Every structure is written in structure tokens, then in C-alpha cells.
Length: 135
Image (cartoon, rainbow, N blue to C red; front, side):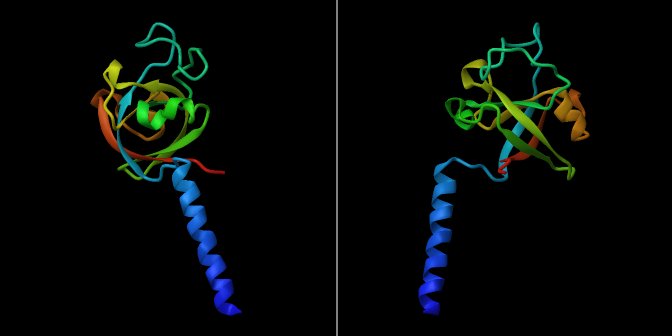
């Protein structure tokens, strides 16, 4: 009986891992973070997720097309992790497509994210990791 219970537990874990992988969850995904303006009059138009402009004082992110997943991550939170040990959450509001000059491993965040991570915006790009925030 104990071996049957163990087999059920192991099977449950494997199913969970398959489902979480199929859902496209990202954990500690290496990326290059750039600075993006989300306000009207800054680079680009309104955000792809809602067609609106947003304040750069909010914690916002545009994901490269593959990670944006045709809008599947719109409105969701990701955690951005800096090499200095700081992390902060940001809401996905836009796509940063390669046709607009973004790299395939790029996330583009508001100045608020850079400040929360204690990073100098004049650097231009920094290496980070990011993960989906799962509740």
C-alpha cells in the first residue's frame, strides 16, 4: 500500500511539472533589461495590452515577443531580479518586439523598476533574471 501511495505522489508531481511547463511559466529566466518610457510622447505608442499610456512611476514591463506570448502575460506580474540582490515586481503591459529593435532576450522596464532595483538608468542595459509571479 505504501508503494502505491508513493507512486501516486510521484505521478502527481510529474503531472504538475508538465502542466506548469506547458503553461509557459518562467523561473529565473536570464534577460537583458533596458529602460522604456510608457508615457505619451515617449518612444513607441500606447501599450499593446490595453491600448493605453501609463505613468513611468508605475512598475511596468514590456516583454520580448516570445515571452509576451501573444498577450497571454498581459496584466500579470513578473519578478525582476538584479545581480545586486534586489528584486521587484512589475506588471506586463506591453510587447517589445524584435521588429521594434528589441532583442530576443530583452525586457524593457519603466524607470520605477530601475529605481526600485537601485540601478543607474544611464547604464542603458543590465543583466537580470525574471520569473512569473504565481499566486
